[in-house]
Length: 344
Image (cartoon, rainbow, N blue to C red):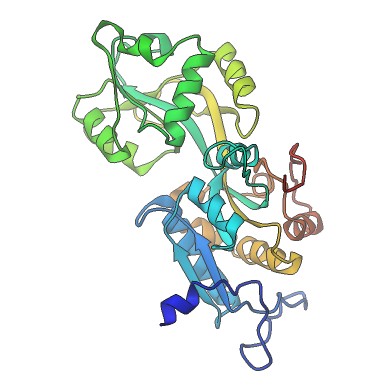
């Protein structure tokens, strides 16, 4: 069957004579890399932001390689790292924090099998640790969560783990929140926001893109604000996590009840490939998106921040040599990775 055949990875194999059209020339006269047979992109759940963005990337690449079969696959930040590492996908979306952890043998990887083939292509969006509360709530700090009804996702999820680390950075634990009748509810994203909207939860903490449409929907019922973290908690969190996060300031007015800016930590969402991807193919992917960036930014409101100052920064892992060459040629700034470039 066709589907079974497509599961056999063929992207890194160039097309044979007469199999596909010749590489498409650029306005400057240079041609894109020879067309691949097949390209799989690790995305996210159907209808989610990752899926929408990955579908947009696929549409751009189809314009460059019209004869290439491009498949957008369901996944997630962690699963995408594993799929690209194993060769089941060629491109993927992930967060800098997940990529850092996987490189160091933490979830979604293991100490025995760290994920170290990950190479950054382009930083796309920023996520931040956000603790949403009703704008009129008496909760103004992590300490104020004691005795409250709180959701931080479900055990094992990135947001759940980040919340545990954040509490540790503040000298707290989940047991502190559960004191005096408080509870940490193990709810999904949708369940959490429905409960906050309905007043069944006092706070929802998530590592999330911003401003997220689900939070906007919650604001149809009540104005929302996100907590600001104190400097010592932020510094300690960055020490505990080791990498993949950076200081982040959410602007005043981000949400209806956000009367002041909020200080927190964030991580970049970026497009990545394996170190095994040939340099010219990696360069072609980056060039295709960058030269069509205005169309790309129109795919989703959360891509509005894509700019020369952001695309080469914050990916935590080494940048793919093909992407790096293009950025240098265009004068686009990049941030180096402190991770050792080996496979472990």
